[in-house]
Image 1 (cartoon, one colour):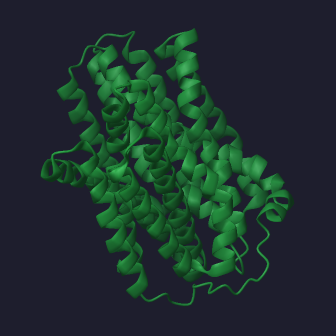
Image 2 (cartoon, one colour):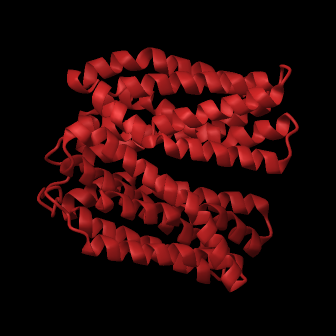
Length: 387
């Protein structure tokens, strides 16, 4: 278990440090908030660009070498961003950090898929997700410490460099039991796998991506709705903090339920809870006792998010070829991440055209639709003992 958790805590620390520092560093270089948002987006773009190549690299070279290469890319990105004399260099650094994050995440997922017995796959991948979230919670504090010690906002990137170097040392020394690939598959076939498995990707993959969509909109809507109903910034921040604690506390329970009662026992209740909580946020601006509607909806979202922490990855592992899982897992990751990437743009469009409550209600309908159609896709594609 430490071999699973410690690397992901360190990995999450680097991600958590990058999220607040990238836009702040861009603003310090350009003086433009818009450019800060653009540079911050490079983190996600870097991840998307490397999802499919990650599957090829893992199949070709094995998990450990790829993890070491990804941590090297992340540390170089952090160092380049720290020393960046211009916006262009800072942008390249952000892309490198995002690329390293994507490749490392895929390598860890592949290793768990082949090294852990299927009977405990759900709780193992849930623990993986929970340990990453713990690291992401700690990451901003490490970045703040580095910023304070250096007196420069770009000093926060040194936290990324430090955690990446430490992570590389842990990966290099950790034992890799019978799941290590060691480059045994000579012909990685990522695009062939994507085309061959397009049916499951376009049906089950896109449907389960609604969970990723709900996670992405949650991070945006909770602070926006808090401000809309008149709560002060301190209160909203405290609510987000409490929700994060609830989220983190439930990841292992969700994994146990996934293993004992199947994937649907976690995914469907999570989608229902996401739908009800988005509807609650929509009503919070229209009904009396708005703050209670807001608080209860935020708590319900946190429960759904923590409860479902590993279910998307677990379904991907269930569907992957155990002899060479990386090509399918990279395709699965790209498909299931589409919702979280499109969600902020869709949310912004709905809010601009209609209103924030209407956007929340539309997302509630999407979650309800996902809960309704998911069982049919799961029954079609997953073995009966894992449904």
